[in-house]
Length: 371
Image (tube, rainbow, N blue to C red):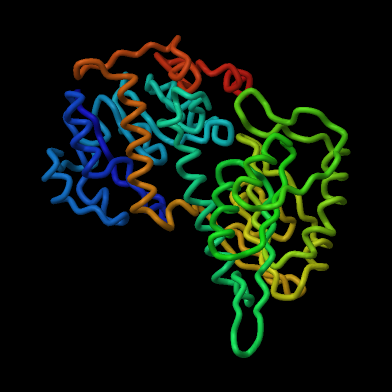
């Protein structure tokens, strides 16, 4: 069975769907690995490195014509073979037209952002892999842009007090942001509507901030934070405003899959922050947690610096490609037996991730959107 690895064509994308070390593992599954020439260049992997591990270098049409195609973003659908399998970050709820096109092409597509958050699927969890790196990098962006050093310093010229950092959202990205800010020497506080994250925050040496929103369990069955009502959002913003305005840096990580990111920091709160304070909005691409965020740009509001980085994982493409490739290899092991494809769409992992098969949309939520 042939597995194709196309070169990513998005201008800001440096990642590639597999790396040379993972090619060797795919070969052990009995697969022929076809890599488009130049696919790994932007992430630091040479064609010769792929060949040395057993891959065959091909043109784009051959890579996309494989039985299974591994990609970061969906490639051109018309180039895929009817009956082929696609594994990629498809963003199906934001781009349902992609799903319809894949179904019409009779492609079996697995949206990797839908991998269920269960113990068995941890090694396949692409979102967690990417969020981990993004949380780390977001703190580095804040530290590099801040006019204030993060650590405590005792110098002959006096004592430099540590920066105060506030992390909003304690998922994978938030926890890594907390750990990174602490390693840089900052005093860190964090907030999440899921109160059961308190222990995780405190285990990293940070302080968990508690706001009473008058709600119970705010975690859904998938492990994500539930969306708040409009009244709860207003109360949350009010309670957070004073805390945010005390901070030297704020990292926001709140995202609701398939929906606009929740607005956590209104413009008037930004205007009341310290001069030189930095906000890094990790939800910039899905609307932003801050009202002043512009995706891909830096904005200065009354002395506060608001960063809206896009595609943070691509800024460290060599590392994220390695992680992404391993996630895909683990997922492929669920689909391949003795070098042949064996789909079991009733299986919990496959059922949760597949969005279309045999010409039909099979994800229930996407069916409703299609209607």
